[in-house]
Length: 387
Image (cartoon, rainbow, N blue to C red):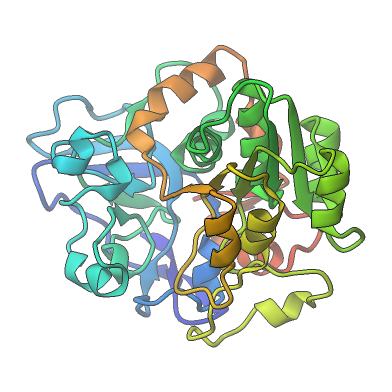
């Protein structure tokens, strides 16, 4: 089959690789009908994630049709249309039983390697480094899905793929980003980063009863989408001092909640775009967004970190974090807890996630799509690909 494979920094290729096969009785094989490039895929593309190996199949946002199941998979059958969550969870370990699915103890075969870096291992992810399992991803024609009796959600409506695809990651991730900052009705929520996750966080904040949503970025088309299509007030950090503007907008108190939808490759005012595209994977992650958030959110406020960090952060504003009594929650998304309720919001017409798509490509065009997305060229916010 054809699949997009990693060969080094800024080097991804569509190669012929072996078709996936059933390896465990809880596996399923899915024929991919739609897949997407995620902002966190760019951390791999830019060489910032440890544990990548040449030939790794990328991609963790995908959906498709079941073509084969293992003997223990009784909830799916051949021909079923499914969306597959990007986290892989067993459904029955200590953490899955607490509905902390992205912390699954069983799914990462390389848990010892992850523990060396992080103290403990989170769940395995599709297409995202051998530290997190080395599980081949879904930017391919077919994919093997472990624990298929727990992960994929079956779709029985006639909604289009592009209305459903983002249930695999960015819609639930944006939703959990708001959910985990314990937002109260009427709160002012500030969101750093107006990429895809940030856009879904904006809409999720409104769904949960936010009084105001303020979105921060510097890319004009992202700010326009946040403002004109989602009703957020916006701040262009290249043109305004974010802290000062937020104090002005909130009467000196600061937002109630802050959400960092940026992560490892954040940058600050005046940083040239190319400077953050380092091929040196030993470079510290950038603290610009998280520090600005810590400084700006009101005393006693709540912080949420859905943005992916790949290693340590130098210059972290821990003094302000502690002295302002801020609460912090982070983590990969506990997907299995969100899939069904968020599918219902799509089926009920409360949201059409396809609003985020700006570019469509064939899988064979993936290397060019990555380069374009990485450079933020041609108004590129979200790329969907079909095999």
